[in-house]
Length: 302
Image (cartoon, rainbow, N blue to C red; front, side, top):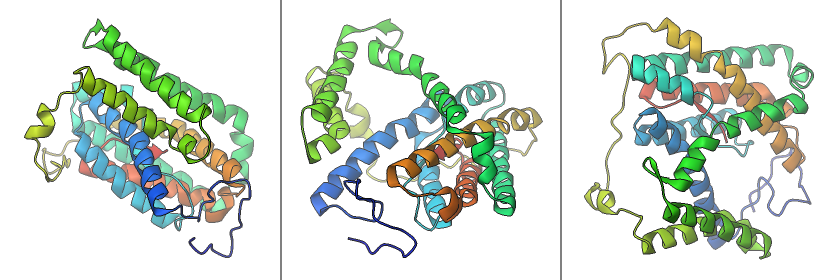
């Protein structure tokens, strides 16, 4: 077990507390589940927008490390691609390409930085008054429900046509996940998502849905083709992109604070105070700025 800092305490209700480490085997399986859970969303956003998923993964990893450093490794969070910007990014990509998205992402990140500096100056007590849980909850729900169409299409359709095989695999994956979660106890229930994915993938292979040709042709190691505005393109200002994407930062800030509220409830800690909401906001903002500079989509806390 990792030694806990003096300013923390043990949560007796937690199976594993924030600073505890599981056994090596359990840790590997839990890490794989975390990877599967976060990977899908992180690469889906760039795929929907037309951005290289490998760059999104790179910017996500760098952003997460920056967030961890700024929060002194106290926040159990991951910085992945944000769905709140998808519709706006799709429109900007069609009209002006990625340089416009990059400037919008950097502007959104700067909004985070400014708000973080304000919170550092005057404190975070006002946040709960302006954005109580009853307000934050519906906003997070709306962001999630905005993906309902994409989820339904992926689960039921092959291209533009409905496909019962795809739908059957989706339902099988869901049912297996629920069985592992509800009918098993102990560690098996903790890795129900990973086990459900494995079962669904195995059935997909049996039914011939999985195409391995891309895997066979892919290089074992390769560097992401960074899409850096100002290097890949002649620099040009996109004020419409900045004015469109920057305000969305206030939506993702609400989502960010909702995640911190959930973490507070789960861990019985107050992350608004320690390490401080200004640090978590600053980490999120810098992550999005980094993404904009290297060619990825804006990020948010998962």
